Length: 249
Image (cartoon, rainbow, N blue to C red; front, side, top):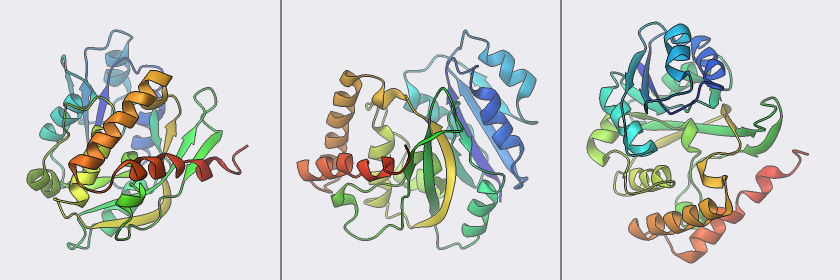
């Protein structure tokens, strides 16, 4: 089973080596790494050319934002299964993709997801937030549940029938897409009870108060667009994050 990992990056030279190392150590050998670079100016392309995986598919071109770049990468991907790994995230251990392939050996499963660690930007060994996703159950979306997007791997057929990411979103395109996949797309997901990705804190959604407000507005737009709830769903989604911090300090 070929797994495509799509990386959309712009000026990620500082963190790319760790991400590339986490891919290089994967025990699952049939890997297609697709990199969509947004014309970086910080040495990102030098890092990729020097340290990229054999056969890495690299394109550097202007884009209209993260979701446009991810879509371009997905279109170029050649794998049977596709996931997204950002430049400042790492796969948590060498067996992540092997677990993905093992679960998706069942043709009835459309995709998989697992748990996520948010780590300190200054010290990636320090866990700030532990997101234990748990299995998907009916009604969970209305209670603000969602799978951690960096851990999500889907069959190519899911994108073919349910579409790519909506580029009119600037921050919440991943949430919108996951709601679409699980409602109109009728995607059957399996839960892998392991930490799959270690993600650095300080991403676009929580970089400033203004960004957090924009994310909440976009989240609410996605909730209403897919008829999974209302303002209560948004509140529950935000409150569900609080227990993920407990015990991490």
